[in-house]
Image (cartoon, rainbow, N blue to C red):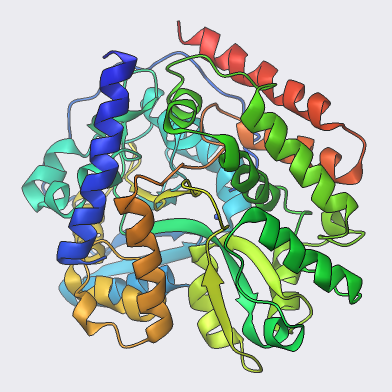
Length: 458
């Protein structure tokens, strides 16, 4: 497919998501396992399978792994679906294990290469993770099951961009290896009370955003909570700045490895230099790389910082955690593109023992009942009855996402293009924050691994 055709396809797909969401409703860390680049033989698309039989006298065991937090909207939705699953299969024992994002990033490849796999698990989307696993033959091709169950109609073409991977493990086309139940994007959470107390309003440009941050610094307040000890968090702050100078062509070239990417060009230079400038001006305090993401969230909840830049996955938790002040959200102002995409994926390991049960559970998470639970818990579902959303903040969240999508504004996540790229980005950004790397040195450090992987696909 030509680059022009691919660009037109992606633009159309993403706009289509906006139509779908309006009509019918609606986190990342290093991978340390060694990459296996040789593509595995293509597997036949999965079809509805007969129930596997347990040994005589034993119950079947359905194993489920995911890493969403207990107070997240996804947890509320999936727990509701799991109750329905247990009612549907009273003779099946459910073994659920909650993992952390870091655990899954570091061990998923090893687990998937074994026979000790769950029947269904949550996996990060993108070339570096789901794409790599599909290329290695570790995931079940869900194309036919999705058609039989109707998932391909529930997921708009744009949502399916990060669910489909070709023989090289590059997202955008090819068989369906994952199913997502939600959308997500990065935004600024802000403390309305602190803004009012210090006489500032929601900014409409980057310059106004910096003026707000400067005013808090002058008052002795660190304006932005950042858990840089968990390096994946910094990648969002960095990409949000890169996107001020990016266009759709650069985004697609970078993510889909379809064209030239100049890491010393305007966009990457601006983003890295601006992040370093913000660190020097005190926007993140003196020890951002020594604070965990959990502690950064806690500090925002306690009212110690007026802003926090993170994803919609934090929204549901804040609905219940924040007790002492009014809060809201806004997009980083004055730009078209925003870090975001369809959500993480349900995948069925190729070696799963109970694929029929996996399909039943996934199906329940896609239905309007559990999808509407997600919406009311502060999530961005893809198949909810949005007329049933009772929380005003949740309506605001879904409206913001729909606006991004309708404007072709989703820019995906910067760690996706290559296996292990999160580690490259995260560790480099920690050095940029600590001052041991200059912006130019950081940009050079992320160019090498990217270009090496791109060359390996030729």
